[in-house]
Image 1 (cartoon, rainbow, N blue to C red):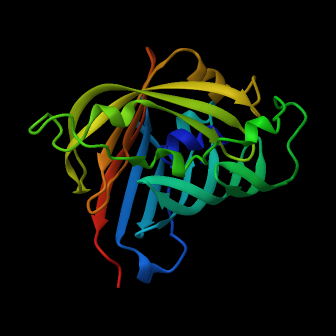
Image 2 (cartoon, rainbow, N blue to C red):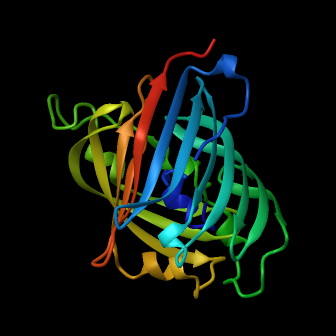
Length: 280
């Protein structure tokens, strides 16, 4: 798929936001809600990749995995394949990660990451091969108070501000947050702010209201300043994520990610967003 903050805008999403889920680990018999979603990545309206996601939510635990690829006309920005997986607990409606793994196979990098977390801090981190010296150094402080890029874009669904408000039980408050993301290699902040309510319809599954958040990206550590995608998303481009409710759960997940440009827009949009009840 892409190298690491790319996962934030494709996974997710990322999320969702945002990236492609092949299978979710864990005991499926414990799952209360299962979300299966697939996304098409377009650049200048030309398909350049895809993402498939599976999320399983239990009463107090969750698992999510992702795999995806991108290339074609986006090759100058990013190309390759990736797989991601995260597991954790649900506390007060929030995803609290306990582990995160990723495998990146890109034109400029092939790397495996395994990360164990405890209360927002990295307890154990394995990177194979070790990070190159041209990355901005990551400090111990950068490994605390963080969330992985898959768990980050599973947002709690706050109560709506008023009965009958646009978006049903969606609330602008869902967007009012900064996501402190660390993927084992890169530490960055994704700053969300409320933009508008909207309506969407997937080819299969969800059709209804979404809450749209503007997105600000701030690289902090572990990145390569010369990477084309880092430059692309750091140049003040207008970015937004539309979050849809997960049926049967008090959480939101990315439905669409958009990066606007005068030359061409990058869009990651769900063509399937389907939640089902308890898995037997």
